[in-house]
Image (tube, rainbow, N blue to C red; front, side, top):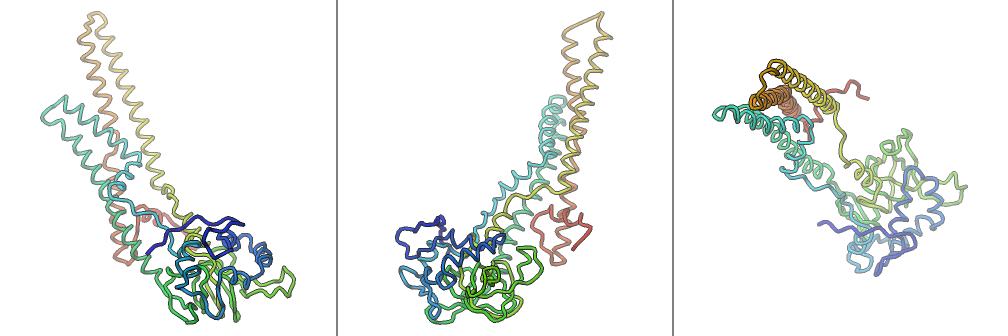
Length: 388
């Protein structure tokens, strides 16, 4: 059951009815990877890890009391949120179909289909609809194949990710060690760390034994970082870092940690939120956009040249015997011919060929146990020439 997240508290503020006097924003800022040294100083001003535990109403011997009406699970999730990352809702099939029309070639094809249906039907009411209908069919096939693949794979990916991320961690609650799903962790939980553990939350070290964390996925630094609870008996620059950042991995040692930020308020959650932004166009999509622009421009130029050339020819041949009715009829015929040139210039089979080839690639990769969410990912990976 997902708990609704409330707006983070600002420094110096305290939510009405809350027993906690440690604003969410204050504790979140301590885990900014670009300012760990400043965070050490800020933590010392707050009184250290033990003072944070007191502000969060956590006992090192008892942990949290889940059923306490003032400081239990419900009170903590209402103030500090849950460890469930907010995900964008799955787009419906119709929305994905509409998204396909962001492709410029498809938009050109739609215009070409409409013009072809109108012009050819006027010329030949019995058979003129065939070409325009064929273009419409090609458009529908491209849209439905792409949207259907994206919809099915998105649902499969979400189910697989939920199963992959699900694991349990040992916590201290009400004086007992209990196994808790990582999605049920709350701020104030005391959890036990072992070698190989990947951190699902931001936390501080309470106790440690040769504890070392690999933070390279977050900071880019390849050297492991020793973690310990500072005693403040040494100079500020030599104090160990107690900050365990979500997404990092314990490579050595064991320890006990105090959970301080969860879900979208943790560093891992904030990174995931940024990664959910709309993806940029792939190299193939960019090339197809250029082709569509060039074809459109070339088609219009050729059509104008033919239209103007035929118009000049008509004027030269008929200037001595001018009839407005003949001129109007010729003008319409020349216009239809010009439009036909534009329609013929559009490669209606190109998007379909690209979509079918990418769909085939998805199927081949699935047979090799590689599940691809979007068709365009096959093209992107296929263009890679160096894996490091």
